[in-house]
Length: 364
Image (cartoon, rainbow, N blue to C red):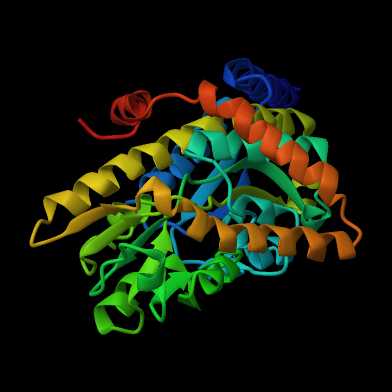
């Protein structure tokens, strides 16, 4: 009898402990943690990587520690041009994908690489998001798209030959990717497709003569160091990025966790656009700071028709090629150009973007 009484007391004590512990466990917390891997094309110290880590931290916070995301900088989990496939196959669970690095695969996304009036990353982000919401981007059907963002306007940088007019581009081997390849060909340059992470070494070794890229790369990838001339053309292009998740992983998430991902994904695109704009400024500043004869060349407006001729031909070919694939290019391109014009007067200033980055991402 005494032993039974002791066992009952002990059992009651154990139940009481569990009840007490359950009182202190936050609501919505699940015992099984969800471990995810996020791979990006940016280096460890790049502010986009910092922003990816902040995304991971925010999701962990809002799920009360249930979701833990490990961020893998460029090359530590998968090659930059293999990020999308790594997410599809489950090697990575989440990936920051540069569609521009995989030519001929992301047909509608390529519109962001076509010549346009896009002046900033904020406009790129807004236009790309609107397009994605209005049209069915079948090219992303095998993943779950969390959010979209993208850089601003591309510039020409060269190591030895200054580009002061269109003819100066002839024969120049420039790092490029995606839709930029056709534009550079139309301008007489020799495009060399490669991931941005390889551009610095290729410039240093003389494999390429320069690059066609956003100012962000001057500081973010240190491309200001091996080049001497920076040319601002009267016609240019933008690009795009997307953050996608493995479809099976997404489908397996609890509904409350999906809600957190969706909420955070609505907040992060503008943050990325501020980082792009910050790097555009700091990239230009970094280039100027190196001195030693470095020069910024602005192609005058009266030369624009010469540059526009090749740009128009590239856009017309893009439209014709995609129409032949059965894509709704007439409505698509019209909407793209309308949204660009709509967002240009609404974009934040460079000063606003810089202030946000300095306040929220840079260490004091």
